[in-house]
View 1: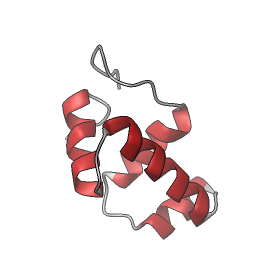
View 2: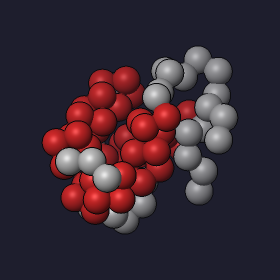
View 3: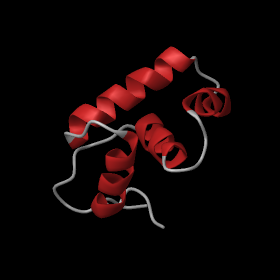
View 4: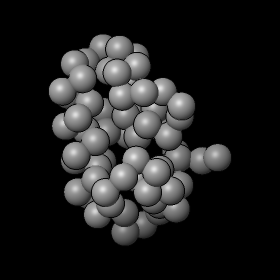
Length: 72
């Protein structure tokens, strides 16, 4: 998926996390799926919250769709 121009740069792992976070998986399930610790998932989440200037998972998902990182 190609992001729209002017979007913040994301690492491949952040993009992978973002796609999973836009699903029904819990953060613990995302950690298992990505083969990382729950603390690492917390780091991805906090990084994306900062890059997107959001405070919740729902707003992060909506922003990801608007920016073109995730499609419905």
